[in-house]
Length: 140
Image (cartoon, rainbow, N blue to C red; front, side, top):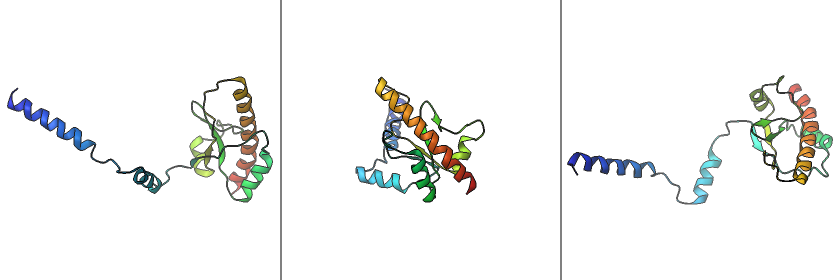
């Protein structure tokens, strides 16, 4: 191996190893770093909703009283906001003005009929909730 190739290999190894230099020592260090990052969007995760017993109108009124205007969104192959016609509202505008909460278990994978029925109820709940909260959000 020529001297030039030898030093090229050494330099490549050093660069590769130095690229991996910053690795948090503990899990809590990495969690602290994530928590210290500023929020860059109005999107957050919503607590799971038991749609069998939830009342969308009551939940929306409670949120409005607390001045919480986050709209409920589903995370399918993209973000969807049930009950809101995204032809009339830009998603980023809703995100900035009202905020969005991604509903738990709202991904695009449905494994059985029970899950499909539950997803339909979740969609109906979110649609009714969002229609009420959107009015209050636009008025604030």
